[in-house]
Amino acid sequence: MKKLVSSVLSLAMLLSLAACSGGDHSSTSAGGSTSSNTESSANTSGDSSTAPQVEFPEIITVTVPFNAGSNTDIQMRFIQPYLEKHLGATLVVNNAGGASGVIGTTAFVSQAADGSNILFSLPTPTVYRPASGETTYTVDDLIPVSRITADPFYLAVSGENDKFPDAQSVLTYIQENPGQFTYANAGNGGIAHVAFASFLSGEGLDALSVPFTGGTSDCYTAVMGGHVMSYAVSESELTGRSDIRPVINLGSKSSTPGFEDVPTLGELGYEGYETNAFAGFYYMKGVDQTYVDAFDAAVKATLEDEEFQAAAAESNFMHRYADHEEFSQQVHNAAELAVPVLESLQ
Image (cartoon, rainbow, N blue to C red):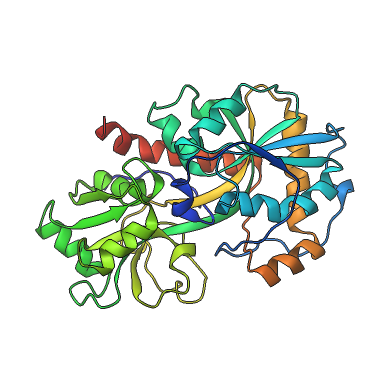
């Protein structure tokens, strides 16, 4: 069995997120609300004194490489006022959508590495697109600073599907019928595709990927209509759906009610295949490490802030923090896991 090291990922979320594209640039400074379905790891109050003493620019531009109103944008605007307090700076959100986040990320890496610009993004433009060689920048051109959310992916079937009542029935079918099992996703090479394809590739199994450019909603419709057998989807997008049944957790173990009993690949005997959606902050290569450490400390203090936690609980914004080192390991492990799948598409 092929083992690949992959850290517990992440958030929110959010495979529909990876499909976001298009939109004009806009600059705002406002709050918002969203939900992500992972546990909060913080439970104490903090203030700006917890961060290393670095003088940030008065205004920091946060590039969100997706449209205004996208899930990623909403997450950023939710955390924005609380993070500003701990940074001692004003954050201006710049939405730069297009090409699943690649357009905005490409522009971001060319900006001044002086602490005045930071990226808030998902794995597709920061991990999967550069790992596939589709971008002018590489994974190493981005410095992971802090992770905010992490959201496991699942292989899900229709709730009325009697053919696949559990994980073992799916695995047995794939083993006995190479190339016949179909799974929808929001696009080959994206995180939803890689979530299941990396496992298949690593174990020498064959199933048919059915990509939908319309995103997760089209995948859901295809499953419910019986056009495909299953689809790969994040936990946040399954929450509240009684007509869809997750059968295999393709990411890290969940403690979310209703998902805690879904077996992970590791529990099924296949170690090293954890794929989660995650959202977090990145600097561009060349930024002084003191900015990385200070921004990371401010994020941690924000997530430990009692005022933020109260607002997050009320809005069902579930967060899962990872510091610079853990987040960096997670990003590079995710890229390593994805490379064989991405190479097979070329």
